[in-house]
Structures are given as C-alpha cells and as structure tokens.
Image: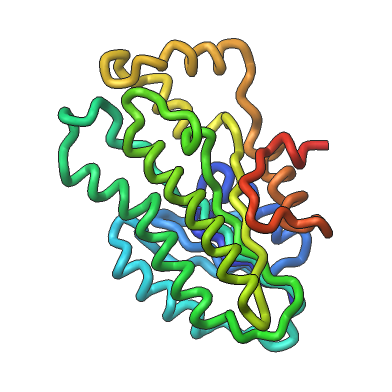
Length: 249
C-alpha cells in the first residue's frame, strides 16, 4: 500500500495533487479547512479530515488523532506533503494588524513544525525504505518583496525547517527524505487575490498582473505533475529546495 498525507488538499495545487495521487493508486488522507470537490470525496481510497491550520495546537491534536486511525501494515511508501499557506496580511510592517500577523505565522510556519513533529512521532520507527516529507515553499523565501514581509519570512523559515529536518533524519535508523518544493507562479485563487492588491500595500502588484496578462501562470495540473515527478523520482532531492522547473518534462 502507498500512503499520502496532504495538508491543504481541497483547492488549487493540493486538490490537483490529491487527484493525481488517487489516480496512481495511493491511499490519501487530506486535511483542509474546506471539503474537496465531490470527485475527490467519492473516491474509496480518500479520507477527508476537517482541519484549520490557523489554530495550530488544535490542528496538531486533530492531526495526531487522525494518524492513529491509519494502518501502516503492508505499507511500501509514505508521503507527507505540507501545502497549506496564506498570503495575508499584505502591507508594510508598522501598518499591519497584529492578530493577522499571528494567524499568518500559525498557518505558514508554526503548523508545519507542529505537524512534522506529530507525524514523525508516529511514523519514525516504521521500517519502510520509501519515506518522504515535502513542504511547498515559495520563491519569496529567497526574494523578499515589499509588502510581503510576513510571507517571505515564514517561507524562509519553512526552508530552514526542511534543511534542519533533513540533517536530523540522517541520524535516524529509518529516515525520511525531506525537500522543499517551489511551485512557481500558478493560476490559483491566491494569484487572483494578489492581482487585486492595492499598490500602496504591495508595490509589485503590476508585475503580477502582467504575469497573468502575458500568460505566464502555470496550471495547477502542470505543477502537480512536476510535484508528482519530484515525489516519485529515484533521485529524490533530499535536503534541497527545488523548483517546479527541475521536474517539468
């Protein structure tokens, strides 16, 4: 049996990746705040768990309970993919609402730390050769943009989590391989919201509007296919932060 656990499975890249995993005979547990579409929910090898990463301690508890219901007998392959993220708040530091900053950090950085901790607590000792953890990151982690201090900071933190975790896993008897995956710019609801931002809050907005106007946005299907290539390659990029372009045929 091949198992995949997807955090942020209901929309965009997460939903498309979930569909592709199901097509490849994976047993998928999807965690998200909203339900995926019926085409995913109706699959017998898919389980949906309602999950709100903005309340990370409660989310970690729900996640741990869901893991207890999974059977890892006769499992040949395990994937953990953290895909949940939010962009708000956008704007210069000094103008933001403090509660919005705290919520942002919960989803983009605190939750992946807590969930990785809970996941490894349950799965570290499993004597399975093919064990992988993948965190969906962003170019903003290494390219700071004005107005995106929260997003850039948390994605940079996520990259460091990937690198530290990969080094820790090398000390384990049954290690996971760990990587960060930068999906580039996709035609998603997040990109649509970026194009509608006020220029005072996000001075780079016209560049992102041009990406859309000039047809530079990739489809979630194309990016999910590249991510699948990354997950299933025999040369998994352990400890690395890779780009969608590295796995696009």
